[in-house]
Length: 544
Image 1 (spheres, rainbow, N blue to C red):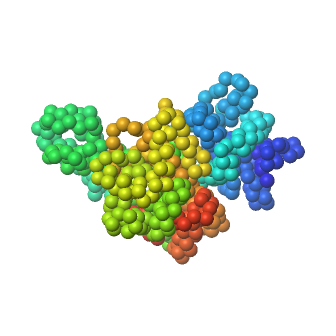
Image 2: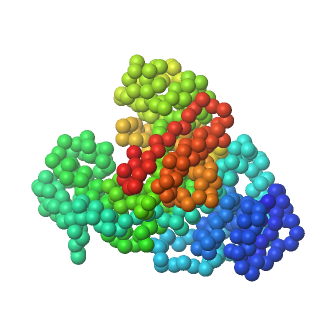
Image 3: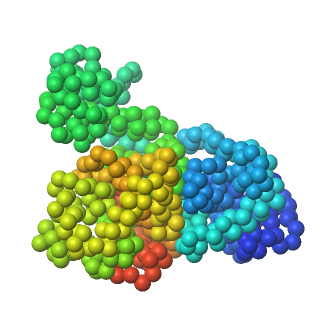
């Protein structure tokens, strides 16, 4: 059963192809009407954008099981057609269908700290008037285009998962992440010293003086990268930037205090006392998550930096009395995804083990786990020199199908082509933006050139890993429905559930079952396992 929802309070029953069933009917109390239909039928709700509709329903105490988010679906379909980044709102869809000038998407306001604006149901987030004909026409057109994709079944799964993720994102923002303001303040004082009426806290001032002394200056601002680069140049050291992995290769007395300054300065500006006062209310940190916020399908955040909380600050994330956090993190996810999508039987057998790198090492690298890891990461990120070169040769000889899978994606990218994830998410064109999340880890320094090929070779893996994580999240949400457990955080391939202590063991087992189910839903009957590192903790910082 499908039901379309309009901001003016009308509901319209739909057939599977989007054709209406009967006439639309006005609901005098829309949240109550949606709650009644949800309890009776659990239909799939069709609406312009979950971000515009669902938060208001949550404030009214209404949750739904399923939806079709027209805006997120349109973004996926535009990307699949090589038109990544074009307007994706309902008004734009309708304009394209009728050959009219396409209006830009309305800009959603920046996320406000909790408590500043509750808003009315369906508040004016969509300035253009929406009529039922436009919504039905857009939904029908999307169903037609879905059927024309390369793998319609997979793409429908992607659309369903993306829409489910939008529901989870709104629910997590509404629920909030348990947060102890007093613990947060204590951590900040331990790291930085007490807050100052003006200027930075004491420890940052001390490090600034130490850095200036190391350079023989007295006016250097270590928070300004350009000044730091010039200071090193005056000392006869040329560096391209002040990233940590660059600074660690420099032999100079300013490096140690500079690295500490960078870490503490970020904590002060991103998660300091101002952040605490702004984003934590009634013992909960309320962030705004953005499903598909980066090109690989990973989530972003529009408020509070929920996806980038430093580990030391996580000490403030403390479960409620009598409750626990169940923290589940997918180990070695991207290499396992490579084994599954490439169809390489040898690598799939290794991915059936709990430690994929160790299995590869035993089978092909003379027991050297480090070399096996470097080879696999190098293949996925395009590392072609240094210590990775001989290890890559071993990988290519023993696992040619997996190696060729990412090599082919790189060649397509280098030639200006588009690549897709397993379910069909498509990378931006060569002129589009890069995803910072696809940068290689520190142990694989990025080689010069071939940037587009490095991007596309990892896109096919990381975007598919994001799909696995999203399906895990959606199935877990369904499995936890009706219990007291609550999803409170999702970061790439890590999910955090807050639950009564006596339910923690069962919740942990449920998460493991959902991880296995996500693998089967994506890849069918495969040897590849997707094990989780699961911790049951009272503080998020204590998770593995």
